[in-house]
Picture 1 (cartoon, rainbow, N blue to C red):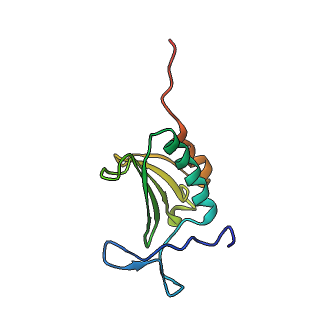
Picture 2: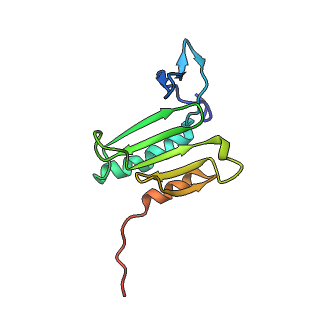
Picture 3: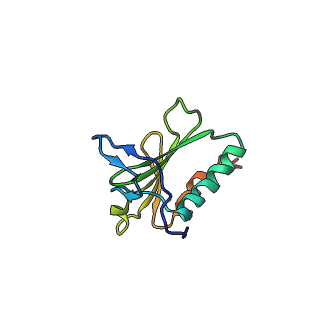
Length: 127
């Protein structure tokens, strides 16, 4: 497989019942993360799982964007969402990290730089 070839996921249903993913090897409409992007995301995710902060994730392939959701527990709402929206690529950047409250923590053209928003932890501030 090449670095830019998308990772094939099972069919998913959008909010309106549309189907995205693959069916008999034919790619349906939908945005997805390619292998290099997913590798960067899973690298950050793996570090946080090893430290015990995160436990579960979900990948959504939608018509207008791809979403990688991160959960502390699978029964809760996602702590963070990493979104890829190609329509914003020429403006703010295709990638964004969104907190559970809907606040966009970081947005940009470079996924690696955007993912740094998740690596920042609490720091002690000396007076």
